[in-house]
Structure formats: C-alpha cells, structure tokens
Amino acid sequence: MKKLLASLAILLAFAGSAYAVKYTDYLSLKVAYANGSAGDLGNGFNGIGARAAIGGDYKSNAWLNYRGEFEVSYFAQRDNGITLAPIGASINFYADFGTKDWMFKPYIGAGLNGGLFTARKSDPYDTSAAIGYNAQIGMTFNMANDLKLDVGYRYDVLSTLDFTLHNNNIFAGVRWYFD
Image 1: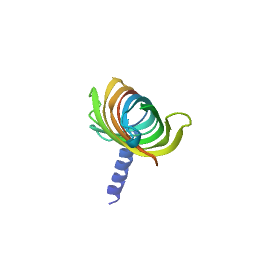
Image 2: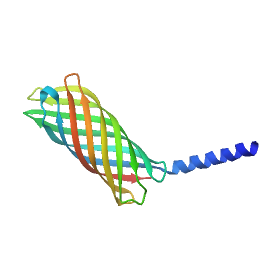
Image 3: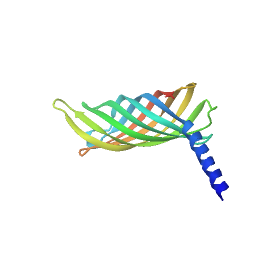
C-alpha cells in the first residue's frame, strides 16, 4: 500500500510539473468593425474600435487549449447624429481546437463585459455604466512560433439603465506569446 501511495504521489507531482510547463502568457491587439442596434436610439450604429488583452494559454492535450484573458476596449459608433462611445473591460474564456502543427486553429469563446457608455447627440453628453456579455468564434493563423493572426466574429450585448446595445463585430488582430 505504501508503494502504491508513493507511486501515485510521484505520478501526481510529475503530472503537475508537466502541466505547469504548458502555460504561456500572451498579449493581444485587435481592430474591429461594429454594427449595432440600441432600441429607441437607433438600429444602425456603425463604427470601429480597438481591443487590447493580456491572457494565458493552457495546453490541456494535443487537440485542445484553454485560454483566459482580461481585455480593455474602446469603440466609436454613430447613427442619426448620435454617437455611442463604450469604453469597456471584459473577462473572456476560450477553447482552441487543433494540434500545434496545424497552420490555423478554430476557437470559440465567451465573456462578461462591463464599462462606461457615453451617448452624445450634442453637448452635453450622457455617461452611464454598462454590463453585458459576449460570444465569439474565430480562427488563428500561425505567422511565427510566438505570433498568430487572429480573425473572427463577436456578438456583444451591453446594457445600461436607459438602453441595451446589441453589437455584431468583425475583427482582426495579432497575438504575441511570451514565456
């Protein structure tokens, strides 16, 4: 029994140390085109934005990676003379599929959003807090060992006390990995 417990302890220690080696940090920068609707405010809010994130990639097996990241973003969207400028932060989680040898890898993701919304028709402008969620699907392309091109689609919902913005985003960016 002692040998069995000692063997299990050694196996767990080895598995734990092997798992720790499979963690990699990254920095992500993206630009996006957004098209959204905000109920009574309008249905054609178009604009561009940027996102920056720092995260960690956890290799679980040969076919599956898990990622988690903290992201900040800024968008400027206009419709009928109204400008919406959400400044936000998100906690996102992803599942990447495919082996290391693949030139591209598909992924799915979801997250929780929060931030400040500025709605401006003319001066003065109105700023309010917003909360929401997102869902995304995309693909990364290997450009180098530590650099990936990231393209995809993201659906965002951000709610304030006055309105809810539903955004469709198409984005492209890069992800740099570092040890």
